[in-house]
Image (cartoon, rainbow, N blue to C red; front, side, top):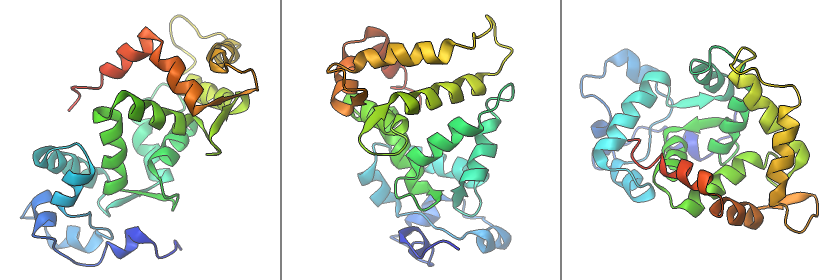
Length: 219
């Protein structure tokens, strides 16, 4: 049983200027309404908190509701949804890391608010915002720095997700080699990468900067 947190308090029937009705279809049937245990913030409030337009939020909500009729997704559900995109590999570990990055209040579930907040940073945030979000993903224990062990766990999860039958075949030692390359960011050689080192190094890498720009027009 989850603690009575912010998300459950939002599940009480309410209508903030009718904005919840504007997020969903008016012909929503009684069965769907009976399964909803969490209703999202008002549309105007979500517009203020994110960088999405009213129409974009409506489209995103319909997709979210289709995958998560109750309004909340737990880690196992998230893994199942994510695995559909990587059928050739095992995406479970990486999906768990990603889930923790979206579940910012660490209550074991992702609401629509959590989802669009993270997506807004990834797709519409500044370069620093996006890099900070990526750093938080890699900082598995959320202590403000990335260790070699954490980065190795990340790299192994990515290789597991991509599958063993890629071409060219991935070498077994490749994850550790990537970790060593990553730790060139450790400027003061103290064995960890801080967020300052991470952002500074990424901003100097043209390939990383180009990859960040690919998200600009996704939605």
